[in-house]
Length: 197
Length: 197
Image (tube, rainbow over all chains, first blue to last red; front, side, top):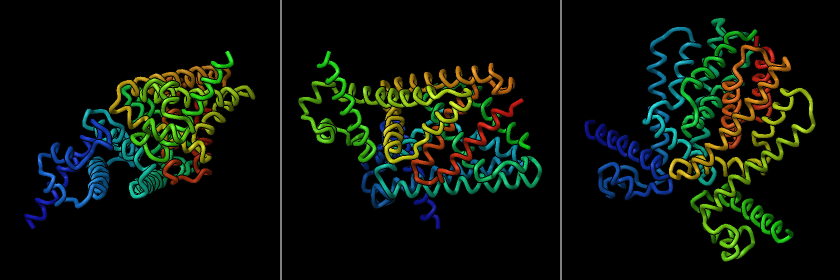
C-alpha cells in the first residue's frame, strides 16, 4: 500500500506540473520532456507513471476536477442554507488567486483542445454533465427548503449558474474584470434566485 | 480602389480559412502552409497579404469581431424595445449552427492562446471591454425606457450577460446542451431583468 500511495502522490505532482506548463506555455508545449523537467522527474519515470501523453492529459483533467470537487465538499461541510453554500462554491470556482488562474488557463486550454481531440471532449462533456447534475440537485434541495421560488426550473438554473462561472472566469482570466464586480454579479444573480416567485 | 477592395476580400477569405483550420486542427496547426492550402492561395500570396503569422491571427480575431458586430447591427436595425433587441443579439451569439460553432471553436482557441501570447491577450481584452461597454450602454437605454428596473446596475448586468453568452457557448460547443434549454435559460434571465424592482 505505501508504494501505491507514493505512486498516486507522484502522479498528482506531475499533474500539477503539467497544468503549470500548459498555463505558461500552452498545451502543445506540454511534451513529456517539458513536463518531466517541470515535475523534477525523468522522462522514464514519467512514462512509468502514465504510459502515454494522452493518459497524462486525461489524469490531469480528472485531477483538476477532483481537487475542485474536494474544495467544494469542504465548503459544503461548513453547512448552512443550500443557496448560501452554492454561493460560496460559485465564488470559489471563479479564479481570484494566481493559483486558481493557472487552473483556469489549463482548463481553457483543454476546452480549446477538445475541438480536435474526441477523447478530451468526451471527458470534458462528462465533467460538465456531472457538474450540472450536482448543481441541479442542489437547486432542487434549495427549492424544497423554500430558498428558491417554484417558478425556477432547476435544470435551466444549473446550466445558467455553470455558464456564469465559466463566463466570469474567462473575463477574470483576461485580467479584465474587477473582483468586486464579479462578487456583485454573483450577488445579484443569487438575489434573483431567492426572490423568484 | 478596386485593387484595395480585392486585397481586403482576399484577406477576409484567408481569415475564414484560418478559423476553419483552427476549429478543425487547433491553433498550433495553423501554419502558413495549412492556411494557404485551406484558402486556395500560395504561401507567397499569404505573406503578401499579412506579412506574418501574428498579423494574420490579429486580423482574424478582428474579422471575427467585425462580422459578429455586423450581424448585431442587422438585428438592432429591425428595431423594437431595447431589451428585445438585446435578447435577439444574445441568441445570435450563442452558437446554434455548424458555422457558428466553427467561430466559437476558433474563439476558444484564441482565448487559450491568450495565456501565452500577450498581443493576442491585449486584443481579446479590448474586444471584451468593447462588448461590455456596448451592452452596458444598451442596458442604460433599456433602463431609461423603463424596460429594466432601477435596481439593476448596468455595468454588472453587462458583465453578467457577456458571461452567460460565453458560458452557454462553451456548453453548446461541447455538444452537451439542448438548444431549447439555452433558449429557456436566456428567457429566464431576461424575464428577471424585466421584472427587477
